[in-house]
Length: 258
Ligand SMILES: Nc1ncnc2c1ncn2[C@@H]1O[C@H](COP(=O)(O)OP(=O)(O)OP(=O)(O)O)[C@@H](O)[C@H]1O
Ligand SMILES: [Mg+2]
Image (cartoon, rainbow, N blue to C red; front, side, top):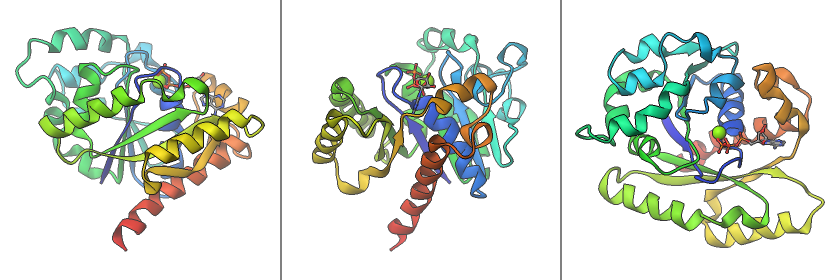
């Protein structure tokens, strides 16, 4: 089982789009995948077709210990892809958890062994480094960082790396950054290429995915249809790019074994 947080405290960089579409593509490759929505905006849940207004339970109820993970896990329309959804209730969790002993490890504690049923667990983080994100970073082994290929993309990355170091020291010594993924790439601009070069100078070669996600209008349309890109627009660039990313993610395991 690989557990991966999609993390960047900068908003609108492609965390949710990557969680939904990478998850769906991995499932298409025959893997068992669980995605977890840890953002009170609940964009991931909506993207994968969950009616968030009709939920009996959400990830919030797992954090408060009100129910078992099995009560919350839903199947999606993609075979092999399950989701633990969120709704607006989650916005209160950050404050409610403050007074709880072991507040950074609540998610890990309550999810327990259910994660072992899956090949991949992908967790969509909110755009902040607060308590919800700390709960994710305590649980997972890996971090993927979606980055935009624009001038401000690197702003805030050093803060993100500091957080990684602190969590590694205090809470989760196994936590590793294993994938930088560029989202919303437009090959026409020189700036895009320059940003990619700059990032490659900062990280090890095997930490940066070769696959680059191109800007593709179908990717921005698909959430409103409640479908991942492989169902909504199978022949699109977006579909092609996320499938290529999924194959590269699977490939990471083979290169580790060698
Ligand atoms: N490759 C792409 N091409 C076109 N639009 C994209 C692409 N990737 C993401 N988008 C769109 O950009 C917006 C932001 O993406 P997304 O919601 O995935 O970012 P996020 O990092 O999860 O944002 P937040 O920090 O608010 O959670 C969305 O409207 C999404 O549909
Ligand atoms: Mg998001």
